[in-house]
Amino acid sequence: MSQNRCSGIANGTKEWQVGVVSNPFREDLVSRNRPEACTVVIFGATGDLTHRKLIPALYNQAADGELPAGVKIIGFARRDWTDEFFREGLEKLNREVSRTGHDEVVWASLAPNIEYHQSEFQDDDGYRRLAERLDAIDQERGGKGNRLFYVASAPEYFDDILLHLKKAGLSDEREGCWSRVIVEKPFGTTLATAQHLNEVVNGTFEEKDTYRIDHYLGKETAQNIMVLRFANAIFEPMWNKQFIDHVQITCAEHLGMEGGRGGYYDKAGALRDMVQNHLLQLLSLVAMEPPTDLSADGVRDEKVKVIRSLRQWDTPELVAENVTRGQYTSGNINGKEVPGYCEEDRVDPESETEAFVAVRCMIDTWRWSGVPFYVRVGKRLPKKATEISIHFKETPSVLFNAAPGGVPDGNVLVIRIQPDEGISFRINSKLPGTTLRMEPVKMDFHYSSSFGKSSPEAYERLLLDAMAGDATLFARRDEVEEAWRFVDNIENAWHESDNPPPMAEFPAGSWGPKEADEMLKSEGRKWRRL
Ligand code: BG6
Image (tube, rainbow, N blue to C red; front, side, top):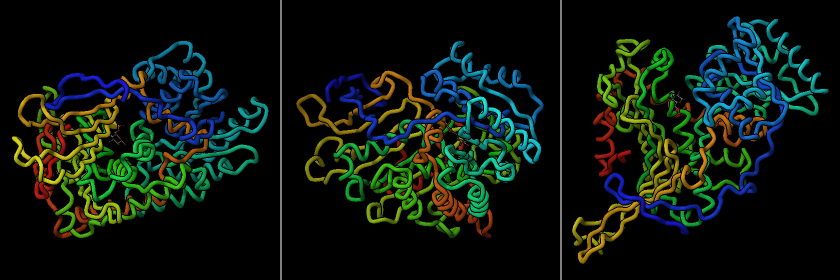
């Protein structure tokens, strides 16, 4: 390590900053094609996702010079808006949320390429007009053009949109250019509805042209999991049941049901909203076998094996033992009083929906036999933070058991997905002095200081990948369905059985119900404090 320097004490452990040794992002490791010019049609363009994530992502790509020249954007939605009104709203939000700020010159180059297309989602004529519009854009360009359809409407319209695209011939193969579809989450609400949606998607676009988005896969540190594991020889030999005691994955959010989110969330709950997709995707990246190559299917073949190997919690007893669900009661976050879950806007006061869930996942493979992966996610926890921690086994207790403080704790490798993306490694060190006292110290790598620039937002990377035809960071049909199989069993125990496991409570602003702590305590472990 070239530039180690001590940067003070954090959380009772000494913290060491690790400087960059060499740039690990070698192009040849990434095997990416180049994004190609296309027309992006966004369904549900008046919504929050388009305003807060998609257009700022395209803007930032333009600002970074990554957006291919000639990209056009058409917002398709039901409201009676004009191009100007649409652009003005997008510009206002971009000023507020864009990662790199708002540069008038960049916006002026992007804005004329953004148009609005008004239509109901079930209106044949709206799609016929869309087809004409796309043809006209192609004509201007002097030939056929690539098309990227982004289905970001409310989920009840997904089927309609896909079926109408097919009917209007917009999903047909055209020689020399491509038509692809990105489908937003939620991808179904159960295994059966996900299978149905997959039938509709695959009846419209080929699987190779289908991009099921999971924005956690686009986060910089999530992508770094594979580099960390497979580009550093020291980790892989230890990445198994012999050396790893357990793994924790935490996704904490301090927000509750602001902005009318309660309507959607109260029907979904934490398990469907976050575990089925984001958290099981992170888990599969941590637990997968090394792929034979970095192709989309090479990687996804290995990820799906992990999800398929999850031990199923398919009786109320198993669910009670291995899963804790909870709702927050009123409490205090950052000095502000907040209501309990059942008092939130658009939430049923009698709601049986979980706003917190902790699951003990067991992966029944040779590598992971007996190693629990504890996964927890919740709203109204003390702060927003997502991290994965790999807890290594303790050393044999023969040398240091007589030392003050006893046997040292095991090493912990922490992958911080957000905020402050980075990786830290906890090791035990001797305290300076004449007695043998030990204290944990932290070797810490922060993306922001080591690389000196902010990471692209997940949607930036994912949109470029779809334009480049690289589906590695998108979920494949079988992954989505296997994840639903796991989640459905738990949902059934909660909502269909005569003897449903209880709903725990915790005050907003705390780290979840004590039952979730008990789950680990009963095995001599505890959740890591974030
Ligand atoms: C979404 C969930 O997929 O992810 C939300 O529907 C959640 O409930 C969000 O708040 C979290 O994403 P991020 O990127 O802010 O961690």
